[in-house]
Length: 119
Image 1: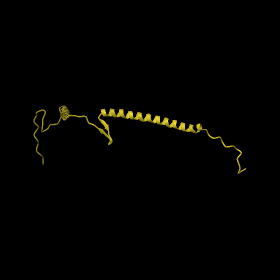
Image 2 (image 1 turned 90 degrees about the vertical axis):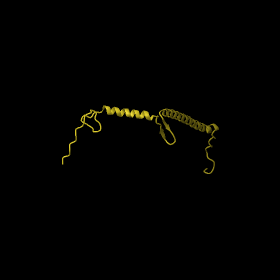
Image 3 (image 1 turned 45 degrees about the vertical axis):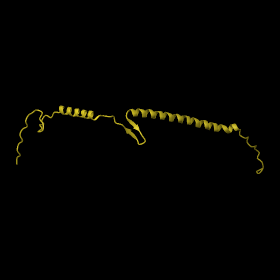
């Protein structure tokens, strides 16, 4: 009976429901992944937007070329006044005990005459 009919009857045909169940499970799993992926994408975009708004308040902007940092406006006169004030305070508070300059003299004393060179 090698060439004849086998003794086992053919298996019964699968019903339409058993053919569709794996497809439904696959669609549900893909839908769940898509749902989770979408929410991750939405949360990341909202975090990026809020971060961008906070950085814009601090004069930092992101462009296609990179990050640009804005500088707050400082008027030249105010900058010069503050710099000059610091220098004047440093000058007034400075003391050099044994230093006498030929250009200025705070104590109004005449410097001693220079001695001639010894040869």
